[in-house]
Image (cartoon, rainbow, N blue to C red; front, side, top):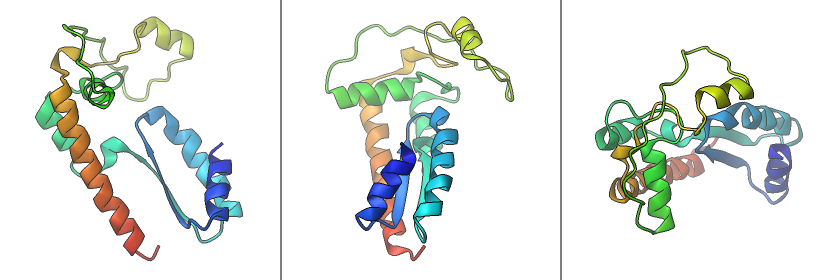
Amino acid sequence: MVVDIVKSLYHHGFRKILFLSGHGGNRGAIVSGLADAGEECPLTFMRYLGYWELPGAVEKETELFGEEVGWHVTASEVSMVWHLLRRKMPEPLKEKYPPAPAIGSVLTPYLWKQFYPKGGVGSDLSRASVEKGKELYEFLVSVLEDQLSRMENDSV
């Protein structure tokens, strides 16, 4: 799918392509697809970026949600989703998910489901709020606008 998207964009004249993701699990497949697409789309700048890799993103998230933000279904993610839904967040969100596996651990889908039956990993949803989600989202959009402007003006 990534190759098809890149080839279509290339066909329409795009030579700088950024895939911005909100899910770290997409990295391998997207980076692999970008490498494959590079074979058919010469002189094209392509990059994968998780939103948390934007300049200042981690610091802003920590400022709003604390040091232990978690790994999956985090208070920041939930907050931004409810901001984008433009609805009041259900109260009370008290879910606190089990900690993340040790770095370097490889869990099969079966084991993942066993350890994290509700999907969340290492996060505390009592920290979530629509207001914080709006603030983080607007910060990230601003930083992304700056990054895209730099990308557009750079000769890569």
